[in-house]
Image (cartoon, rainbow, N blue to C red; front, side, top):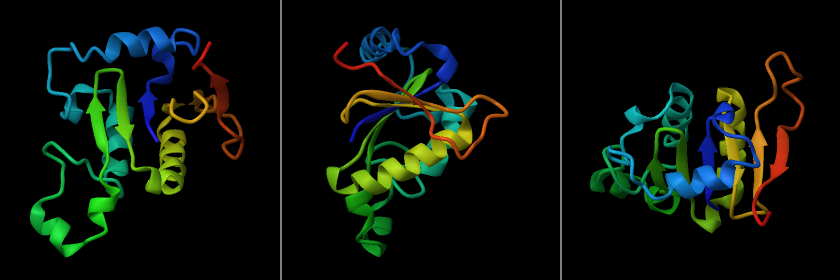
Length: 145
């Protein structure tokens, strides 16, 4: 599963493919494993997400000792790429259900949109402020336009 978490106001669903094409050139002048470069909402989501799905690389990745202590950690590591307007995460397919559930919950909590590009190409957008939080997030298909 490869979702991309985005600031919902930074791009429309129709314009997301162009944003992704630009962002995925990875040409921003910063390290792509530094959470400090992204927005506060994406940073908060990332910091909670890595408690369950730690990064396989970078300063937040588990040490060899941590992996030795918890053999399950290795099966949960994810590949993150952090940009100024998005956080890209690639999770093992064996972790799909748990990762999707946690990610969509955290995205809703932090008011962040999720682009589920490897599974139907939907963008799940957070509910508007004051909306019924129990409602499904807004869905918009962008892939394969």
